[in-house]
Image (cartoon, one colour):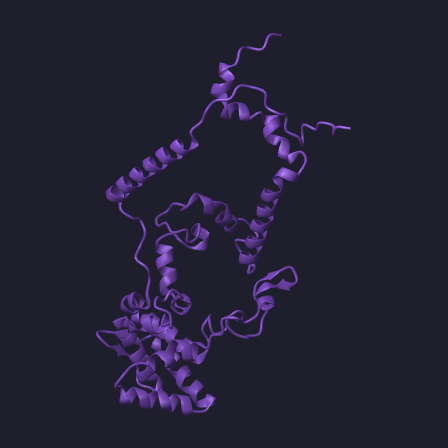
Length: 318
């Protein structure tokens, strides 16, 4: 017994005319046209992208902000130092999807001690610096209470520091912290700190986790992003500058950050991710959902796509 034909599920066999179609030729011509247009536009309009923010460019443009951030990395109070999973075991749940904390479920798999990774370890790579070596040794051997006293005193005054070829901070009891911060600023301005934080045993260093976290802990990158209309409430970092959204394929993702409750929720990233995963699953299941899969047949949109073919057919007599 043959299966009953269901127009919502089955496709009728085509008995109409067939036309030869050279798909390879069309793809080749389309690729050539797009390539020529891309080259012409690249020459005429150049790239709209800004240069990447590095530790060197940050420390040169805003040296005081750099040092303010560096001292919080040293004393463990920066955003990265207190973030929690996947970087450290700071108490807290992080962003949650309902009762589930995704960050804690994954765990700490990129361990990060900002004091060592961003300050002490890079400074120890500087050669022929006996005074700096002595300062680092003094800091590392001091009790935690003494370290906190030094960093707290320095952190209170560094916001009022000035820079005129060198960093000038009001006198105080900073112990070895002041020469360490001065050396780290000089290291960043020379470009050596960028290299130290991306150092890898491999031939090419492609892991920019540490410099990106360091830069994000300061205010400089946020200020630059705001001036370029790239904050989350300005359509986010979509690799375009100016007052316009970027790539069209990212609009669906970023638009949810403009909609309540995601635009003000502390769990906004996870909520947007959950929405996009749900929409992705829905899209994948379209061919299997009765009714939804029949929308093209009901709307007869295929007649618009193949309008030349249908115009060539003889009119249907009534």
